[in-house]
Length: 350
Image (cartoon, rainbow, N blue to C red; front, side, top):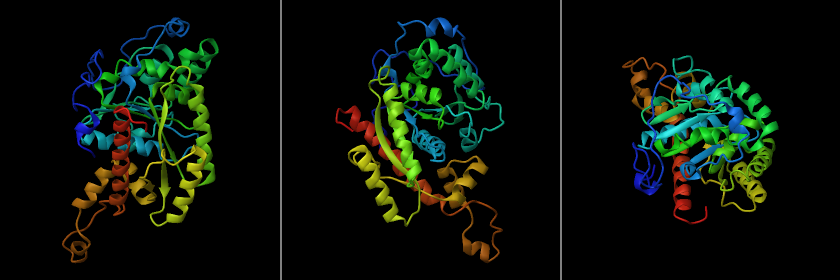
């Protein structure tokens, strides 16, 4: 990770200094609750509702129209790396599947309300309370209750499309002052929730696999971004990242990069870092509720092969050795995302 100064933040405290006028909001950790439930009908029909975008300049939606492209993996692990580097990070699980809970290890704990608080806030207004899952790492918990929120947003959009799309932005605005960066895990194919995500974000990061079907998801993302430009004109693509690639598949990777570059009109929006495929690492991390760099640390602390061979250790099941390579990939991507945002904040086009 880069030095914290390069990101222009004072980690561990609200970043009010770099955004004058932003009100500091106390974060209360623990089980998700909604602190207020103002009737959303009146809010939805109020054309005067505006969003203070100055507080949302480091909100990133990780999105693709297709599933199975490691969106949740990226959100969990990149957020964990930032938190471990001292950045105060908020993750928003906007997926009704709620898989972020498995990646971060809070499934079926007191922190896991299956998205009830977040769904209530999207449908009725109010501010859900994030839960803390690691030092410096908070989550707005997702899960199956978000299906009801999606239905409510669809109904709301029939009366006020603008309010429906800005529902998440209104939730994040009073929370954002407490965080250096916010990552949104977007669901695949859920139009009202995807629209709410990109309407709240300053940046979009699009993970794609090398196959044609995954690349087609880029077209769906482009349409989704266009659909919210009237309420979020500052939204922009931060970059596309190749995921699930073989470490030796250099030709396949380059072909995919060329095709994506052609679709984007240039390769400046394709991240140099890519995330290799390791089923063993993915499975072990999720089963243990560990992030990949945490799994890698566990493997490193385990016995060496020669200790096991000599009978000096039973070995156990520390985890796959491929965890180190995947952890390195994720760290490279996390740094590249921060560097790209830093360049943009300094006034140079990304």
